[in-house]
Image 1: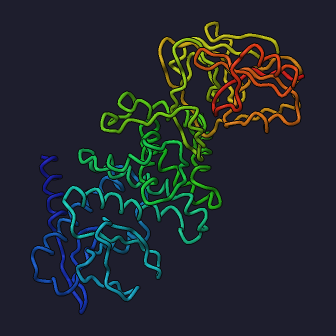
Image 2 (image 1 turned 120 degrees about the vertical axis):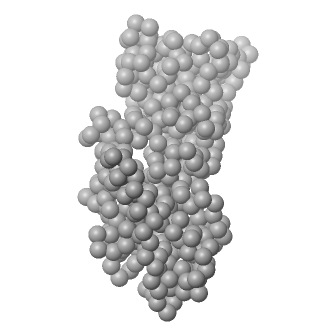
Image 3 (image 1 turned 135 degrees about the vertical axis):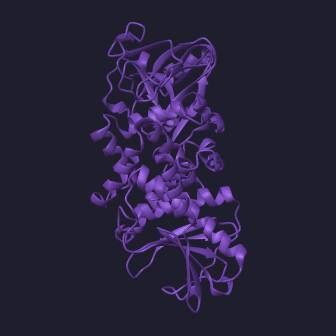
Length: 452
C-alpha cells in the first residue's frame, strides 16, 4: 500500500500544473519550478505541453539533487519558484527588459536575477527529450552551486580559473540523474586527446571534459566529496577550486591533489578497468618523451617511453613503495644515489623523485604515467665530482645547460649509449672512439653526469 500511495503522490505532483499569465508571459508552474513563455502561446498546446514536460523533468531533477543527494536548495527557493525560460518563444524577462533568446548551438544556461540573486535558467526549446533531461540536470545544478557562494564576490581571474570545476560537476550531475543517457561521453575528447593540458583551461569545451576528474573523485569518495568542495568555496573565496580540492583531499581523505593525480592517471589510462562506465570512454592518447610535452596545472599523461629490456628514465613522484605504486608495469627498478645502488625487488626504494634517474627493466614496450606535479630541479653547481644518476622533466639543450660547469654526460636510449662533454680533451677522445654524440636531453629522461 505504501508503494502505491507514494506512486500516486508523485504522479499527482508531476501532473499538477498551474497556469497564469500577464500582458507579456504565460507562467506554467509545478511545486518548485515555473516555465515562462510568451503570452501568444497561451493556447498553443505544443508549447504548453512542452512546458509541462520541462516541469516533470525539473521535479525529477530536484528530487535527485536536493532530496536524495542533499545538496543545498537554490537561493530563495523556499519562497520563490525557480524560473525556466523557454528561449525563442517570446518569453519576457522583466528585470533585463528583453525577450529571452538563445543561440541555436547552445542547450541552455543558468544565471541570477540582479535584484535578489534568485537563480533561473534558460533552455533551448529545440532539443530531444534526452538532451532536455541532461540539460535541466546540468543547469539546475548551476543554480545549486550559486547557493554555496556569491559569484559576484569572486574576482574574474579566479572565476575563470574555477570554471573547469563548476562545469565538470554540473556535467557529473547529468549522469547522476539520468545514468542511462550518457550524453556526457560526447564531451570527453578534449581531455583524452590532450590530457596534459591544465585543468583550469576555459575554452568552451575543455572545462566540460574535466568531468573525468569529478567522476574520479565521486567514484572514489562519493558525492560528499563534491559537496564539501562547494562548502569550501564560501570560506575560501580567494583560493582556486584546484587549491580547495587539494586542501580537502589532505584534511578529509588522507590524500592530496598530487596523489590523486597519480591515481587519476592510472584510471584514465585504463578507464574500462577503473571507471563505472569506462568502457564508453575514448582511449587516452599516448605520447613520447621526445614530444616535449609541457604539463599544465593538473595535467596528466601517459608516455610510451619504455622499450623491451633496460631503460634509463625518470619516474613520477610517488610516496609509496615502488612495487605498490602506480607504475604497475615496472617489475624491476634500480636507483643510484651517493654511491649506493638500491632496487625495488628488495623494497629498498620507498619513493621516487622526478629529479632523479632510474634504471628500469620491462619485458615488452610499456608506458609510464606522469603528472604536472613532477618537476626536476637539479642544481649542478651543488653536485660533487662523483657520478650522479639524474632525471629531467624538461627538454634540455646541453650546451646552454652546463655553461658554468665542466661535465661528462651519458645517456642510454634504445640499446645505444650517447655522450656529451664540454671538456675539450674528453670530447676529442670520445669522437675518436666514435661514440654517438647528443646535443639535448628529452623531457622525462634520465642521464649519468660527472662534474670535473
